Length: 157
Image (cartoon, rainbow, N blue to C red; front, side, top):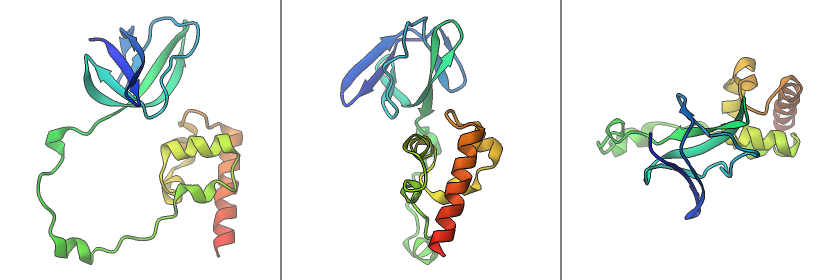
């Protein structure tokens, strides 16, 4: 495992040798405070872009896990040009942007949801267990989110 660098807006926020590597995270060495790893910052391994920062999680013994959203593999991206007539016939349902919940949720709860989903329909499709698995959502915040979804749908009608 090589050196990991966190880069945002062309500026290196931090460099470190990972203590360990998890499935989708790099665990730092012992640190007195959380690392400078803003959400959305690029993660480079030995100078090669491998993904972006999803979140930072606390680990035992003053270590932190920088969770990575990996880039899609080049071979998994189809190189075919889509048929224009076929794509024109497909109707895309109107999706409600996640910003519609902003008026119904506290700012911190909205930020957690906005980092996980782009539309209200994505949030509605998540089960309670899926929502509770998100870092920053507990039982109380889950109740707040459900109430906000209910209020949003009742005001739309």
